[in-house]
Image (cartoon, rainbow, N blue to C red; front, side, top):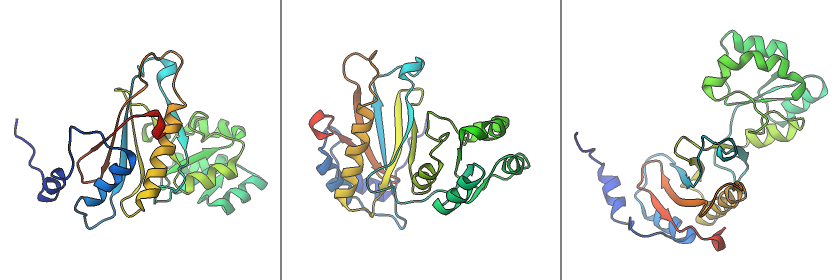
Length: 233
């Protein structure tokens, strides 16, 4: 098997970070700032390895979170809602609203949106879209906060970059917490908020350490291992 050849930029960055060290949150973003930059504004990604078994229902974690300083991008949001709330959803930032007619539009192939939110009363229309939206990760669910009576708040938060997360088969959560152009303090705030949120999700059935490993990386950079200590979150 041929070894993957890293770019010169990546190799330069690799000289800055000690792979055997776990950095404090402050140190993590000091190191990230020293990495050579690309021509685009890289996303800052976080990988959190949890001591969970996703095959068990109570340990298959899923939800949504808004970070203190956003994530540096917006999302195209649609809302399954009718009446006065539909007008309020549009004012809050939804690009399309409706009930049966919106569902029909999607059934006919329209998928130019990033997030779908639904009022519980509209699930009779949304439920028919499972085969279309499910494989693309766009199906509204209460657990992810995308089926809610508070449509206006949900539209505002998701349009502003609210994050959805879920554990993968290996018990990892992967999310972006901002851009490299963010101030280091803002990235630190976002990471602390995320780790505190995840810590609060600890299932009662988990024994021993819950958060086992945390790594931060830019889109084109090596990972930086972050020390996992309760006083940091």
